[in-house]
Length: 106
Image 1 (spheres, rainbow, N blue to C red):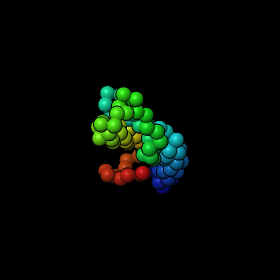
Image 2: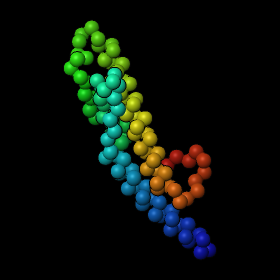
Image 3: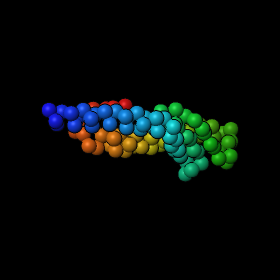
Image 4: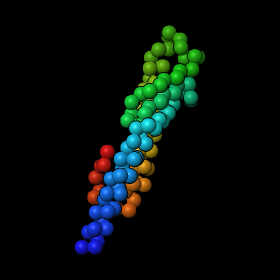
């Protein structure tokens, strides 16, 4: 019975920490880039696009398709970074408790 109470306490602590991490991730921003740094995008912790910065050298009418591809690539780069940050934070929260493989808390 003592082990059960200890585990329940750990679950409560994990839930509180999980809420903190979710709030922290929602406020976080990650930047992705492409084209050797010519295109930068910023996503929030929810994966929503917040900013796009494009080097003026790319603003040529005949290169619109290239620019569009670079924006998409930069957004994908930022998303990968956001996912990695989320996984790292979640590992900190759940480090003490054995969770079933494949269980997603987000």
